[in-house]
Length: 276
Image (tube, rainbow, N blue to C red; front, side, top):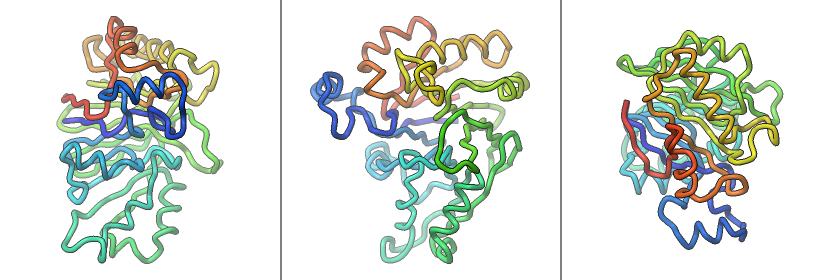
């Protein structure tokens, strides 16, 4: 699997849209890896995990043809992860020609909302939808998916935010974003999995989940990495990549690299790529 990061920021972006704090001022001045769009990844140029508002611009910058995307996995219904409005552009008069048939997958509540919003239009948009349930394996093309429940807060009490275990050709990735530390049931399930790479959020940065239980901080992700290694779920040399950074709690890119690289952790940036 070839993974590229389209965005690595939390909901407000980094620097934040309207913020003039010292970090945001510094990020704008320094530019480069300090400029972060909302979080999303692309796998093998055919699968997106989440659909943020910046997906169009990032796709141009990174050479990703959105019309060739076959699958989109949605973690949850927050706008920075589920900018469904973009999907209306998959038909005339916004395109002239055919696009790849697209399958959008997520929790039942997310899929129900999508079907209702595009009532009667999904066929014209060449979109199929698939509702997923936590811990239930699903085979999609060359991929095997296992959704696991994220620890996250959403308005719809019937929605289950999801993270994803994604397997292709014997290689397995965990995408853990947005979520606080997992509960015991999820950890017990993970003990049965052998992972080749982990992408995990670090929204709370220097603060940690004790300040807000629905996201992780640096100590939380290091504890999680240690647990994965101790339980033989992840090799200590396997990629362990952090994303979904907030300017409130996370320093600029270079400082995060300096602080966390000694612990075997990679700090993602927009456009960062790796392969497993």
